[in-house]
Length: 448
Image (cartoon, rainbow, N blue to C red; front, side, top):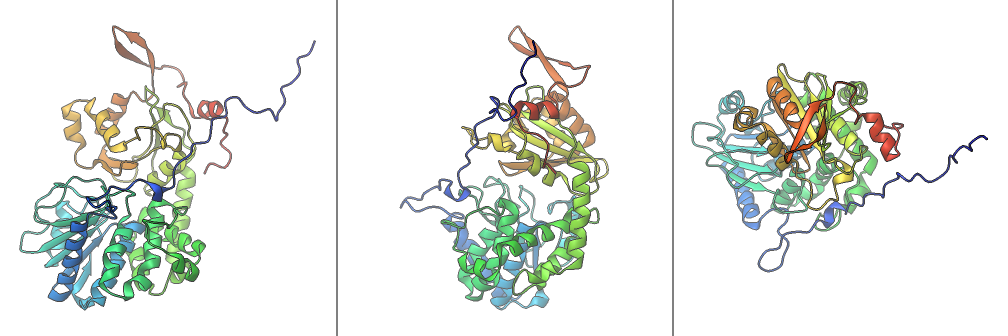
């Protein structure tokens, strides 16, 4: 007797309930003693920062703006540039410093490059921060505008700072800068709202809702279509992802687009960069992951001179599903010689968990499992950024050691005397990409 085939349209028992993630703007705010939300940053920091900007404009001294390389950082820099010039600071006195590929603003070479321009005022936007000596070795004033995770001591000595990192829903640096600068001159709201949208969509995605506490951008969306603004995000982000790291092209395009994103959409160099990056993303994105011994981390290893690791991490974070999965990590050993650049994202399936996944704490805890020596050798460029989007730059040797600590490619063999024992799986890894999707009832179709 032949067995009847199962109905193809039967509901799969393995189908998981849809993960409901609250709208970002609804994240509970911290309140002051009067019950008012502390947003986008503490009031004392906001007022000091505004005073700093006005003082700089009036001083009419050499000024350096140092924005980060992505859409959020670059739009922040342009908003600040337009504010300073609107307040009377001559453009001839403003220099823009873009850090080199793989570099941090606190690196010695970057500090020397900034110092060579002899600025009296320095603005650091969207770079994240850590405690360092003063950026230049002579009298000057520095303001850090940021939203990456930081403690009160994680800033250059003698600098001022305004940070959104402890005032949920955490504003992007462009949104923080826009909120800072709008009251300083009547032209800023009209001239810079579209820049704020591009920068914010660059970090938070295009589905973000512009509802309180976010500012009302309805007039901006009447003037510029969402499609045009979102296309501009990918175009501005593309040059810094290319092997050539052509951030200057993105900065010049943004700074010269005075009335909106239309000139960006016609920029041939931006389009060429986007095509180049798309080819590399497509080449690398289908790499299969390997999993940590406890199945909490999925690691994709790629090799590309392009900065494709953050894009791929974001894409896979929306597709991989597991009750245990907490971290999607994409490691790129081809971006910088002798180094591994990696990006981590919280997978969609884990974003509603209580307590929430904190990538920075998770990565640091993993490193501590390798002992103090590993933590020290991983250095300051390990596990920075945000609780939901972290990463780092480490030596290849340290990265391999980190993989060993996580048990990537190993499988648990059971417990003995209260300890978790691991052994290397000599055969094919059982928790493979295809098994992952088979268990979740989701295929690979549409994943790019």
